[in-house]
Length: 121
Image (cartoon, rainbow, N blue to C red; front, side):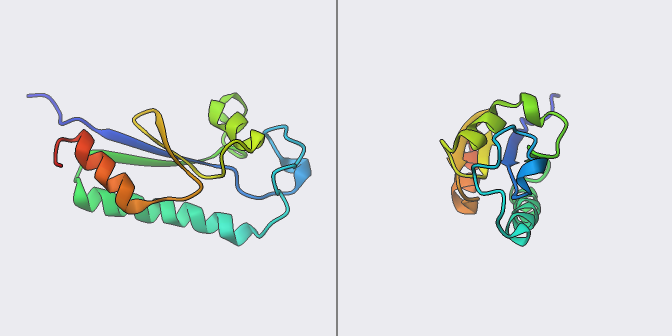
């Protein structure tokens, strides 16, 4: 018997920081001088999302939060370039490798997409 399919949700974020510490090489042009508590709050929201989805889809969803400015993979991630280009606002939400949402964590919409992927809709 094979394991049930697992849906991967990755939240890419570029929290505010001092321009000199920006690992993405953007020179701080995308607002690296804002309130740090707003971005720390996003990491907590990602954790809450993980708990919510685990309750709805036990053992079938994995949620990861990646701070592209601190993660060692950050400089090589395509999502870092997207965030630094200002093409899309942080956070970027990817589901099974596909970019799905930008600028917020829409819990209900994420839940609906996962239900559809898992065939529960």
